[in-house]
Every structure is written in structure tokens, then in C-alpha cells.
Image 1 (cartoon, rainbow, N blue to C red):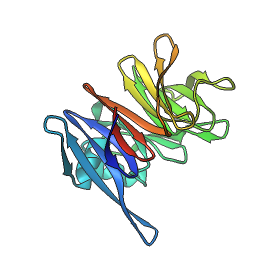
Image 2 (cartoon, rainbow, N blue to C red):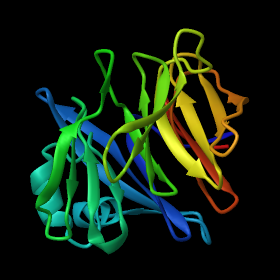
Image 3 (tube, rainbow, N blue to C red):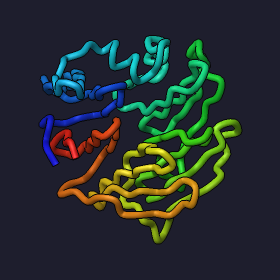
Image 4 (cartoon, one colour):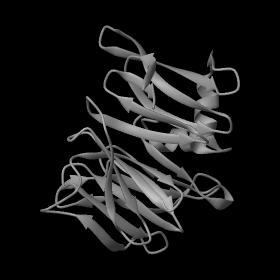
Length: 222
């Protein structure tokens, strides 16, 4: 495992042939300065990028309107759906589905037993959400937004699941509590311990053969 960036990384976004990530550049009088970088795999080059490129990648073509609706665009989780729709999750559990014009067509909340969703992912037109405080994953029907399935609970394989990444027919769950990456097969719902780290793992992404993990100390190439 190789550290490729030191410091606080907020979110990694996969792109064709690379990744984009947001990070804390500086804190000045309690104000956080956020910046953005891109890593291109063919040459391994780091490039500073503008906020608009980050927002375009995260929210789609109508990114300016979506960013205005979501509030804190750094902490918000998003899924760009077919037809330009965007599903948004804020850090307080409030959620909304936006049409292509960024007008909400559904609003609600993703909460379970007092805990709020920490991340979201899309698999076969179903929405998956992780709940770090409850150690569960929930599957929702994206049309009705009704809960359909729960994995975890009192005897849970998860420990503060903070990040979700769909990889084929599996979801890779980043567990901040156990510092482990857990693989869940979304067809059989079997659960495997995939990888363990020396510190809490916040996010995992894979682009081609390149796998990355966000730990408290920075961004790592696995």
C-alpha cells in the first residue's frame, strides 16, 4: 500500500482513467479552505482542478443548480441517475430526488433507529444506504423509497460503516470502527472480510485495476 496524498481527504470521485478528490488545503481562523486535485493514471500526474470540474463530476451537467439546492456540496452524497436526475443525501439524513431541472420530485429522510445514513450507492435500480451508528445497510426501492431489506443489526458484520462502493455485483463497505473493508454480495447477501487497515477506513474506490482507500492520514493506493 502506498500513500499518494497526505492530509484530510473528503471524497474521491472515480472518472475515466483517473480520480478526482476534494481535500482540506488549509484552516484559517476556523475557516476551512477546500481544494481539488485530479490523478491521471496514464502518467501518474497530479493536477489542480477548479471547483466546477469537481461539481460537474459529482452532480452532473446541471451541477450549479444541484449544488445550490444541496447546501454543503462537500459533505453531501450524490448519485447521478439516468435522464439527468440526481439523488442527494445531506449529513443530517435529509434526502431528495431532483429532476433534470434540479427541482425536487421527492424529499424525505434516510434514518434508522435514530441514526442517519452516512453514504448511498445504486445497484440495479435499488438504493443502498449505510448507517454508521446502527451498523446496518438498508436497501430502498428507488421508486417508492420504501425499505426493502436490512443487513446487519445486533450481531452485525459492520462496525461504523461509513462508505459504500459498488464493484460489479458486490458492495464494498468501508468500516471506520473496525478499520476493515467488508465485501457484501448483492445477489446472495453473503458477507466477507476483504481487507484490514492500520487505521479507520473512510472510503474505498476502484477504477480499472487501481484501488484507493481514504484513511485518516490520507489517500492510499492499495
